[in-house]
Figure 1: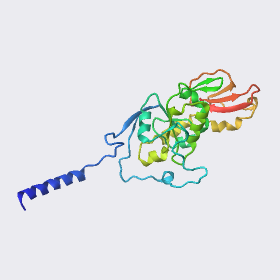
Figure 2 (figure 1 turned 135 degrees about the vertical axis):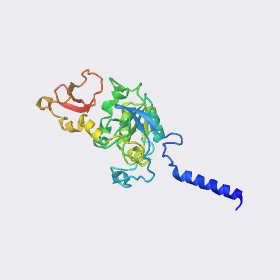
Figure 3 (figure 1 turned 90 degrees about the horizontal axis):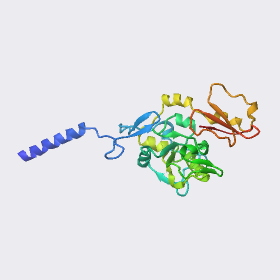
Figure 4 (figure 1 turned 60 degrees about the vertical axis):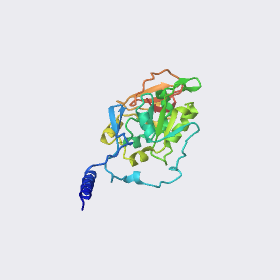
Length: 267
């Protein structure tokens, strides 16, 4: 073997050892290992699980769900709405002018969500339009100053965020300011991206308003209802002026002139 061949072999062995010993990171993008987003509890880092052998388990690994109820959603939930992926969603999470909404019901939210997302269940999205930059007017809602928002739910088979989007459009929300993360939590988890949740979220959620607990009040006379003590509950007559501050722990009960409960909502 010539000196040249020996040198080449030595270099190859060194290179091979170096490659074998080095761990290739699992980045979000080529030069993007992680991003930091602001949450209600301070900054949070979003990255990917670094174990290349990691796999989904449990419900998130399921491929098939009954349809109707869990049907594959269209790429665009309504005309004018923009469908986005994970990289675009990360950009919106870092944009202080935008809002990312977890439109799933509270039981799903408690199991884990995307860091920086806020919980507004699809069944109550219209009640929260004031939080999204709209103002109440005589015809319903004035959304001229509405924020850019991105909505998501459980995945390609989840109809909760598409339903919320269509309801927002019907209420007057501009389609060009609505973005739809179609992949939802299943795609987010499939890519190994950070999920916030666990016991801390469950404890936090215990202090949040849950309108579904009081849905049976609708149609009853408020005078005949005994409300629980120690909870933040506000009774409003329809059309009555009220503060616009958003309080996720406060339940609002709206009645008509006769005291009949029309709706219950958080805020």
